[in-house]
Each structure stands twice: as structure tokens, then as C-alpha cells.
Length: 346
Image (cartoon, rainbow, N blue to C red; front, top):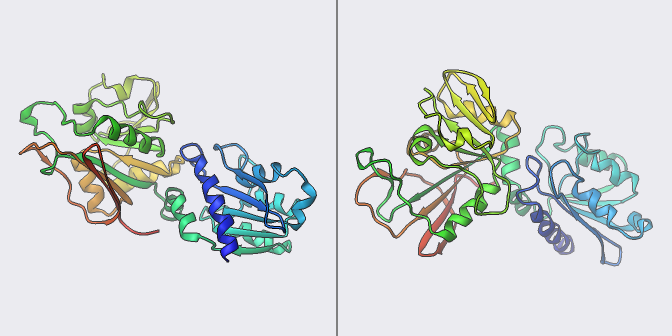
């Protein structure tokens, strides 16, 4: 088992190279090892719609005749269906690979154990569950989405040292700035890893945010605004900068340029989360405001919370949400403490 873990660690390293580029597909890494213990092929899923990790690993092998005596290590169960690319399980069988080591099964309904069964029925020896926890952690967004029917939800806010996330309305519409240039850049990296980013109507109106990844080289997520009564002004950046946005509301369904207005009858967050999932969104970052954050916390519809605590004090304002969770990480950057909480363990 220690030998299997050694090569699975390498497959995990490769899989991480696809971070921010593979969604709604998972990140996957693959390693092919000859009978002498030497790696003869490697690959990872580089981008959604392109070749999967197994395909890239097989293509990297200089001498294809060695495949029949080699072992394939892959972080996620090989696919067994035709999507944008052919099934990887079929490729493994066709190339004569006789042993496959899988990190974890794929929860996606079109795979979900079928890839392993297809291999076993063809006489391939399959080992499942090597570094399973690490492989599931790598794709926690993908796994959560396909096991719950809603996107993985990351809550995010910054607060003062005395526990406020914003100023009261009577203090004007100037937002509190608590992130440093470094922590802002890191937050934009977090944005680039999510499919969508969500704000409430008040946050959209007061902050007039762009919600793009301006400070990190990565894709900008789909922007989502929750404005049940369409109380947001028409001159917001989110409605006019040409990037795709969705506005969930109870008034109308319409498309205006890059902005889609989606009418939903309920204000329950499960409704817009399920609609995003149907659109292929597997992860969302929720940046506020306080009412949206508290509603998601209250209904248990969150998976991770990223809380940045500034050294700045406000003495009054909008209190930060109360939240209970397991501390996953805690680090001090530029004097600000960033804590990551998890609601449950995968």
C-alpha cells in the first residue's frame, strides 16, 4: 500500500495544476508506472472540454508496448460515459493496462461506480480508496455539488477587530475597507476557483462591486445578485460591464445583454442554489451582505467560511454573522488573521 500511496501523491500533485481551469469538471491527475517502479507517463486534466488526465498520461508514454505491464494511478474514477470526450475506461481497456489504482469514486450520476465496474468486467485489476480522503478534499467542490444537488458554498467576509462588517446606513454608503493589498490578491485567487460569486441587493447597491478577478490571473466567475424586488439601480457595474451576471428576483425573467433576470417565487436560498446547479455551477462564493450570510448559516446551506479579521476597529456598525464550524486553517497575513471554517468534513 505504501508504494501505491507514493504514486497517488504524485497524481494529486499533477491534479492540482488544473485548479481554476477544469470546472465544472473535477481536477484529476494520472501517473503510469512500469513494472520496475519507474514512472513512464503522467498527465492531468488541464481544462474543461479538453483531454482527461488518463488520456494525457497515456499519450505521454514513449513506448506504448509497456502499457500492458504497467499500473495506472488516477485520483478519480475513470469516466464511463461519452461527454465532451470519449470514456477513459474504454481507453484503458483498449490500451491493455492491466491494473488501475483509483483514489476515490466519482459521485457524478453518469459515472458513480460504472467506470470501475467496466474495468473489472474487462479483467482489469482495480484498487479503490488509496489516499481517498486527500482525493476527496481536492475535489470537495465537485463532490459536494453532485452529492447534494446544489453548489459547494463558501461564505466570505472581512470584519473589524471588534466584530463589524460594515457601517450603519446613517453613516453614509462608504464601505469599510479591511483587506490589505496582499489579502485582497489572495481573495481574488479564491474567486478564480469558484464558478459563481453571490451578493445581495444591499451589497450591490452600496459597494457597486465588479466581482471580477482583477488582481489574480484566472477566470472571473459568473456574478449573481439576489434582489427579490429588483431594488438595485440600473447603473451598477454588475449590470453594465459586459461580464455575465444573473439577477434572481420575484418580478421578471428577461435577458438584457450579458445580464439574465431570473424570476423565482421564493426567497429561500435553496431555490437559487438549485437553479445554479442545473446550470452547471458546482461552487459559489457568497460575499454578502449580512442578511444573505445569516440566512445561509441559519439554514445550514454552507460548506466553508473564509473570515478575515482586520486590526481596524469601528466601535459600531453591522455586526459580523455568528457562525459555528471546525477550524480548517488559520494564518496571519499583513497583520490580518484569515480563518477558514468547515461545516462538515468530507
